[in-house]
Image (tube, rainbow, N blue to C red):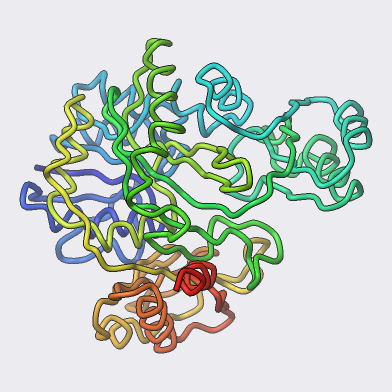
Length: 429
């Protein structure tokens, strides 16, 4: 089987790495890929993730058997629709279904129709009306850009002033462009976040082991939101024995609703959940693997990932093609100073071989590229150092030990990834 993975981040490196282990796979291409996806076994293709016509043309000319889009943008632009028209299997939702991630207001409408629990909200495209609503409701509130903003278009406002500033940034100053031309203002839900990713074939939603992401840039969940500074799996907050029940509550109703609308959902339906006093409520949906949740999840996955994804793309999920390691996995993101704001590029990276020499460690490349025989940074989230361990604590210890062997100027990382999970496990003892 020939496989094309679309994207250039750590998630895509993890997908390429795991798909290469599938006995059914002969060749893998990454478009455009990064410094980690260009090896003797994998090939990078200089086609941007949003170049839909170029990607389809490449897939046709190279007789690709399976396309796996990583990021949300090509999905919302209709890559799966176009691949299907070309007779090529594509693991992902069509453009209509991808609106579950591409438009938060669309997702809220679908949740209401499907009966999925979520936060109460209002949608605005007028700054004065949004500001009036904020003053009326008071704080805390959550202000979200309606469209795609690379995981950075969410402001958890603890004060009215902060919420007003967020509305001004999005609706007044156009901070996120068209993505912020409409905002969703919702109640802030108490509790702790956890991620549930379900693999879907249009009919069935199969829950993968839980994961917990760390969105805020600094330790203690402080600072602005990012694309994710680290993740681990499984999350004690959502144990394996509760996965089926949770999928029935937050994923299966969405599949039924999308099928009813004539657009069966294929791909990964990612539910960001808040577990609070009233149970689980959906914060948002993504229409693809999360980054960095994908990295620890795929560290734990065993078997033929390509067979699973292709069977879903054909509407006949083969769950027996994969299983999951009972051990925990944890990944820590090494980022460039200044991220998620402006940051430098071109810093040389060393120590990866020493890091990966440690037992159970894999370093996934996010923002890297090869330049003059050296590996240098090319993005904000540069690496995700991921490790397996018999316990969450051991996985954490090994990941940070590996991170300590990597050198990159002008870089930083959170030092508390996995801390909440370890604390929760300790309280159970």
